[in-house]
Image 1 (cartoon, rainbow, N blue to C red):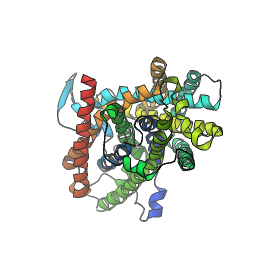
Image 2: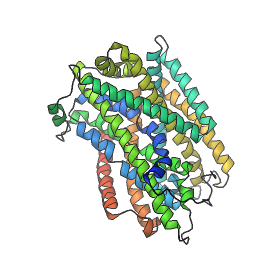
Image 3: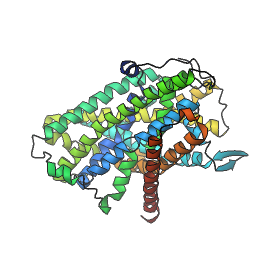
Image 4: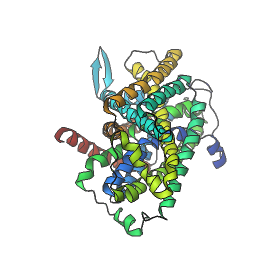
Length: 453
């Protein structure tokens, strides 16, 4: 594959014509699933179920399903325009000066959410370390977290998309099967789910005492703001952008664009299917087991408390199964999340005029360097707080503030920067508007909580 960040964007490639061909060209969905189905599902979603019971099942479904459209449509813009995620944000009107360089306000806001995102990733590493200590009783969870941060740095230093893709595929399959098995087993225990339980969860009630945790779940569960951004980078590295071609006068370009967008959309909907199958079991297990037994996951015992979801349904011997599944979930999420952040850092430097866009070797060097450093920064955050739930909530709430900026930017970019033949249907655009308005209201609630408590 040619370098995905070259401005020439070649060579072009004819898109596959059938379902089988499209499946063979998928890949970003696997990588992003490693990040999507992780901390939000295992820790935040399960904790919400433990706190609220089945009451907020509808909210978890909304959190899963309402953001994939933004993921697909922003990725459409990136693939068809040749812009990276941050270059696209920097095209939004409303600019502030920095040393004579005018930068879009959306880029400044993105930076503000970047740091809390790293803090949240520290919570993911800490949770993975706690899961590993379940597998090896007596192992200090702080030492296992340190070891995992160093291992993550080593994996990201290799800079190999193919290796990362294979690693995520194995981990996604492992934890999805484990959680589904536990949910099925729960139906043969005193914690089994009844139709009244599900009916209660679909009544659109939202008790005020669960507002903060509920907002954090929305910010983290499903495709969050960080994953919307990093997905576009994985699409570039997969090759979708270069395969479309940038020459609008090319008579075959429109056909290629439609074909590769179909592949991208299939990739996104597969992501949605995977995350739904993995998210709902965590909430239902949290509501059916943890809420019933009064478990309250927090601090250094967060993962141990969550293990009750498996031990109460599959028996005490399933502690190993839970520990392995939790490790797969959280470690894959850490690798994918830090890997995506590493790909954004040189883009920030480029947009702020600190790195030449055409210096490809320097760009790769920055990606590798940040891939090494970022897990260590996350580890430091965990050492300071030592509570995965708190760290994850900080990252999730900051991410929730960025969601309406992403959906609003997508609307502006498609309307002003894409050729009319490349724009989505009226139905998709109307749905994107509704998503933007909904996310804007949630962002106001986050700000209100942050200011007033």
